[in-house]
Structure formats: structure tokens, C-alpha cells
Amino acid sequence: MSRTFIYSGSPAHIVFGEGQCAAAGEWVEKLGCAKALVLSTPQQKADAEALAARLGSLAVGVFGGAVMHTPVDVTEEAMDVVLRTQADCVVSLGGGSTTGLGKAIAYRTDLPQIVIPTTYAGSEVTPILGQTEGGRKTTVRHASILPEVVIYDPALTLGLPVSMSITSGLNAMAHAVEALYAQDRNPISTLMAAEGLRAFKSSLPDIVAVPRAADVRADALYGAWLCGTVLGTVGMALHHKICHTLGGAFDTPHAETHAIMLPHTAAYNAAAVPELLAQVADIFGGSVGGGLWDFARQIGSPLALKGLGLSEADLDRAAEMATENPYWNPRPIDRKSIRALLQDAWEGKRPA
Ligand code: NAD
Image (cartoon, rainbow, N blue to C red; front, side, top):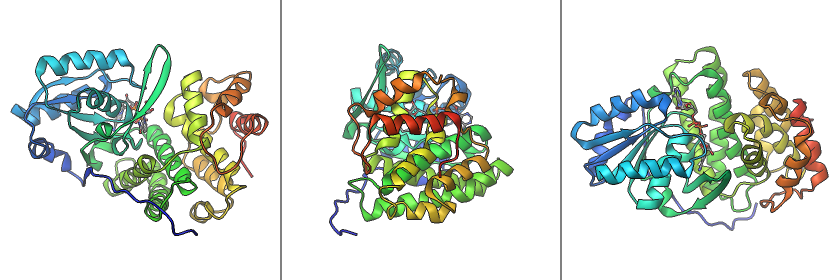
């Protein structure tokens, strides 16, 4: 392995541990703030209100309107509340959708963010914001987008439904698999990626068996931090390009799309860089793609794109879009091979 690399550590504070959510107020004060606006989706608004009540005079309100893909009109609605309340920081309680709203506010105002993640998506440790306007999703990367403080409290994930735990975990694992062959990988990103994969390999089957086991939930959230961190550190490739295409153009659900595609994209790239993915084969057993697919099936993940409402006729356009302006990838891509890969994923076939 070449020993040439650049390593830049993240400036974020990572606070990890059961019950650490109770320290949110201390972190508001450590940031020099006193007027926190708490963000959530409508589904988690009651939890956000309870958090605001615990913050007491440090909270100026709750905005519970976060939705998937960070639509700009929702951000503008939240910005009105930021201005009206004169909030001096945001506290985002939830999954990637809520984190996305907090990032969109920070990008516009440079307000500091405290994120309390309740899924395994990993957005809380990346300087990347994806937002949608007029049906188009655009992505920006900027230092103001990276949250200053992340509080990982496994107790808040005990109730994450099993089906979402599975797909969100596989979504996180996809960040790690792509980090292993990233062009700009470094020894630390590789260590974190492999450790993140191991954390999910051991925890996801146990979560399926006993969803409210605190120690196992802590292992999965630890994996989410590791996998999210590498997503924020190194470049992603074919897998993320295909998932962005399917989510953006065909509105397939985010985590499920990642979960279904991962064995297929990993198998495709393993043919070109088997040495870089050898750890995946070791961790999951068997071949890279086959091992990941067997694991996904074992834990009850959806396996076929056709189950997400995508029609077989859509695959031609998806292959065309996924190969336009491609991200860097370790194996060359062309429309024919990506069309074949999508066909296998649509049918739910086990990769070799
Ligand atoms: P999500 O945030 O949309 O959550 C899905 C649903 O589950 C929501 O209704 C939410 O309120 C609910 N939920 C979340 N945690 C829960 C819990 N513990 N218990 C019960 N319900 C809970 O889904 P997600 O997969 O976390 O995030 C997806 C979004 O994040 C997408 O828009 C994606 O593009 C974005 N994302 C961005 C990045 C990035 O770096 N910019 C990284 C990953 C994901």
C-alpha cells in the first residue's frame, strides 16, 4: 500500500454515551449560546418539545416541520422562526432529514449546531448538505455545514423501528464500503470503515432479535459514527451515484435504496479492487457481494428494487442517468454494465 496520504481530523465535538442527551444544555452554553431552536420532523415533535422543556430558558422554541431531502421552502419557513425567535443555535433531534434542516439553517446563518441523531444515516458528521428545489436536488459542501457538537445517546435509538434500523444500518455500511476503495482514503478512514462494518455485523442481527437491548444499540450507533465520519472525510463512488440517481429521479426511499444496492455495487467494484475489499469478505464471509447480500437477507432487509415501486422500464433511464457525469470509481463504468447491475438489483438476485 502506498504511504502517501492527507489526513484532516474533524473539528467537531463527539459526545457518546447512554444518557448524554441530558448534557445538551451544557453544550448550548459551552458554545456560548443561550437561545436554542430545537428541530425535528412532525413524527418526533413530541420528543423535541420534551427536549426543549428540559433545556428550559436555553430554548426559544421548536420547529417540527423537517422532511426528507431538505426542501428549500421548508428551510425558508424554519428561517422565519429563527429570525422571529432570534435563535443563536439549533439543536437537531432526529435522523438525516432533521439534521439536513439544521445544516441548511447553518449554511444560511452560520449558527452553531448541536445534533442528536436517532438513526444511523451519518449526516451529523459530514460537511455536506443536499437540498431540493423545484424537484432538483443539489449538494453543497462547506465548513459552516459541519455540526459543531454531536451527542450520540443510544437510549434515543431504542425505539427506532426494526425495519428502519436494518435499512439505516445498511445505509451506513455503504459509506464504509465505499470509503475502503476511495481514491483519497487514508489509514484512519480505512480503520474507521472496517471497524464500522464490524460494529454493524455484530449489532444488527441482535437488534432484530432484541430491539431494545441498550448495549447492542450502543454498538450500532458507534458504527453509525464511524461510517458517517468516513462519508464526511473521503469521496464516494458508484454506489452513492446510483442511490442519488434513484432517489432523485424516481423518488425511491433513501435508506432502503442504499440497503438494496450495496451488495451489487460492492460486487461490481470488488472485481477491480479485490485487495481493498478483502476485509468486507472477511467480515461478512464468502465473496464481497455474496457475503453482504447474505447478511442483508439474514437480517430481513428488502432485497429487490422492484419492491420500491420502480418499474423495469425505469431501469434504462436510471442506467443512463447514473453513468452521466459519473463520480470517480475504481472500476470503469459503462451504461451496459450498470444496466445489468440494476437489473440484478431490481430482481433481488444474489451477486456472485
Ligand atoms: P429520516 O431522518 O427521514 O427519518 C425517517 C423517519 O423516521 C422520520 O419520520 C423520523 O422522524 C423517524 N425517526 C427517526 N429516528 C427515529 C427513532 N429513533 N424512533 C422513531 N422514529 C424515528 O431518515 P434518515 O434515513 O435518517 O435520513 C435520510 C435523509 O438524510 C435523506 O434526505 C438523506 O439524503 C439525508 N442524508 C444526508 C447525509 C449527508 O451527509 N448530507 C448523509 C446521510 C443521509
